[in-house]
Length: 252
Image 1 (cartoon, rainbow, N blue to C red):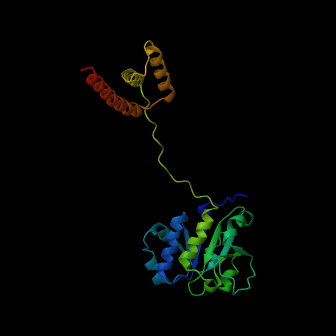
Image 2 (image 1 turned 180 degrees about the vertical axis):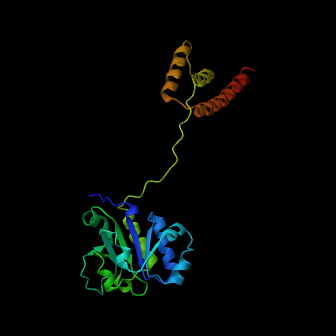
Image 3 (image 1 turned 90 degrees about the vertical axis):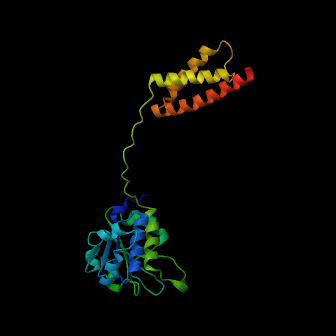
């Protein structure tokens, strides 16, 4: 089943973050994987202001929104996933292992917005925060070091999410239509190519007209542009001069 979720329908929510390096790393991860909706809940203001200058994430940080609590931050989202380790928890919410996220999204979120919440570096999301979450998103790690750095956690989750969502198509300039070769361009190519074939000994006596017609038919099928025609003509003229010089040396 394909998930209809688009990148612009996904929000990253950082709750009570304190380290500006982690905030910057999370924002850069969003840029890396094509996500742009960053929401912060009661960040420590000195760190938040410092993080806004993070290299490579200015657009995400400039458009980030602050909220006084998680409830307001995710009010417009149909599915809220809170990230957490589970070895020391007895979660009430269903647990989704990160590798299963793609399989779970189509049924849990047939439409609407998704929010993934990440807690503070020191204690993660609180029990009250989890009451606002539909499920817990768990990153499988080794038990001896279960916790993951905030920036790394955001990057890993967004990488997995990007594999199952649809980024907005890039805005690309419309390709210019090449100017087609004129009949005169094609005829110059035809005559030059015929001369090269003659100099190289490819054309058998009496077959000149037949080859001429075949070259013209071929060029009509290829339908070269004017630029292609001029480029090819330059190459053929160089080959023609070399062949003519070779014939002149042999005849002298």
